[in-house]
Length: 253
Image: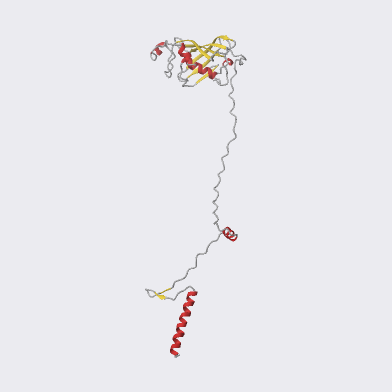
């Protein structure tokens, strides 16, 4: 072999050795760029994988199912403190003139609309053991009021009686006893309830709680401003003298 051929083989072997070394180191032979500069491509290592310790442990045990991520528990808002319940104090009734009768009686009452000229009144028979809230409904029916306004019962004219707690026979029991009933504090329909007589000392088993048995003249219309005289009522009523017992009593049924 000539010396020239030997040099060519040696030179070719050197280039091959360099090429293998460049590949092992992740670099390629530099090639001229369009700008005359050397461009080198660098092999990038893959991004490190962050492992889950629990995943790794499960894989080592042969379980390849992925571990579901545990959702963060929502913050718990403490419930507001609820104040301890307190009992509603009972309404103290004023001193009453009578104790309730052990055996209910049947009262005959006359109820007058105070200040009316001529008189406007109703006569009713009622059980003595009715509470005042029941008596209120009897008066509304007897006069034909609409139960559209405030009202109150009183003994002295000022202190309202607790209607659901007080019985009629705790306020009146004897002939001549009276009780006040005020309806509508704007028109001020002021009623006087008076015991005319005791019809029966025991209430018959078939007796109704109340009945309208008499009366005179028509009830003034509501919200008329408290008109009470015959001339005033003639302007707002077709017949101020009209009164029908059957109609009044039917309103109780």
